[in-house]
Length: 442
Image (cartoon, rainbow, N blue to C red; front, side):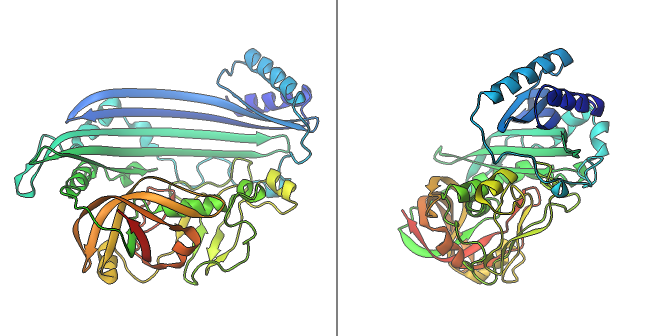
């Protein structure tokens, strides 16, 4: 759909009785090459487009979507959707955001530099060549390390995403982003026939920034590193969490700051705004407008403009994420509906994970979480982990089938240091984290 068609659709919804309307048109294109043991195993191409309608009708609200965008079918769909909304219960708190909060600088969709013109130059043969050259296969035996690579499965993909959001207040907001991704899972076998698997991946909005050459080798090395695990007794010791999975400990904090959880009183951070709950050195910030960085956006799904925002500043809870609806229900000023590009500021002066391990000395390095759960209302958690026992700053042997338990507020108050090794391919820039005196159960 072009802009003229979108505006015509919006006006049709107003003419049919909606008092306010927001439309989001999204289109995505994806190419994928699957690799199995050094050969092309599958190829895929997908083209998707859809229109989401948010309708405010006679004090009621409904959200609908369709991928059938021919004019007559779309008009029939809108009429039916409006009729459906009229059958719902009134909700006085539903409305579009205040116009002054809406984004004004998302005109072309390319302002953040997340679109790579190189995407348009790629051919099927170029994609195939990149995928095949990314392999670590053929079968490689590392006799001196006691393992053989027996299976390697990977995928290269690239995609282009484009969305336009308009509303009946005059909002126009566009976001265009290319993405290039590579991921591998490797399975190795030890001398006793035991199999161990692990993965590695990378992604970037610009093709030149994709680390495509070493992904498969890293997956193999990570799988081999898990060979010969040793049962470890329950203990309390330092917890070090690899940057690849450290976001697992930050996401519950962000969820607890979400407006819906706060309004429903299902958050362990409810009523904590402005309070100092964490160490003075803990600073977590949302940086959604950094050009060229994965996950950055100029606006949220309501069309509200994003901005740099302290989430936790010097240990103080600085913001909740409140959209227009929740703000009206709670009687508070809305903010932005969610964090976009979260960054935890490094602590302690360590650059790499290796430096951090030397500084910490002893503990358990967690490289993956295996199940478990957390309680949103209390902040209590219990997670299965795998990783390595650390002694004198060095990995001694792999560990697995252990649990860590605790409470998120207590855990974050036991933070002692971080590395400065956050992975730029992730939407959350969380480095390797180190906590003291954490409970591990065998």
